[in-house]
Image (cartoon, rainbow, N blue to C red; front, side, top):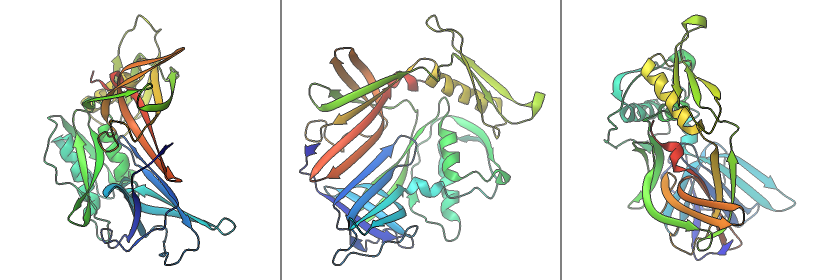
Length: 353
């Protein structure tokens, strides 16, 4: 860890008035994560008994975290734990995407030749429009991807909105999504940001084991290797829809995998899923975890999940070099020290086939 000059604050509100701060928590340490196309989490530890400490109720409390006055996390408190012996309370939250995971599609949503980004915004709008919903995630963006999709989310499947959003994004020519947190005046806002294509945002950032990386580890994993992928869609038995993506390799023997998406009815949609899975599986996945120094450029806040960076690490048998994409960021602040851990995946795994 590195001694931090950054200032962190944890603030709470209620789900009925999520943008109205009620109190600041007496934090002893905290952590938060962001992930590419997935929900993030946060944890705050504080004294169990502290003068003026506010009441925190699981399920009805909203947690916000600031770093140097900028919002870095917002979400719902799902669990609260206390330890009388240690006089500690731990507050655990999931970001607002976890709320979408608790919202079911109860009315069939049908989209015909619609841009995939418009579909994504429509799904979130559907979740926002129901009475008593937590209408916190904005969908003001107007960008389009140029990729149209025909898809039905049937009410009888009871798929949750978060699951539908992840499924929609995870295809060839798909998109990335993140929640962008900002202040408008003194009011926190949350906006769904959609990025297409889903191949990453190029940056000139360099992370180097000899400069701004404290420590690094990597794993090359071929357990999910597949040079041919079948995507299985709607239908039963011999009537089941199937699309196949293949990429012959001189380096690997034929390896096969199948993925099931039983609600997909169109061939184009199935083919996009098969191609996406092939791109991820056609070579061993090199996953890198690195502890990033927060006091050396690039500084926190200038990089984000989804960014493509240069990664350099050479030591003994370890030789990592090239374009890597940030897939998760985890920040821990304890004992006045800040620790940022990033995970990276080879950018080549995100190409469009």
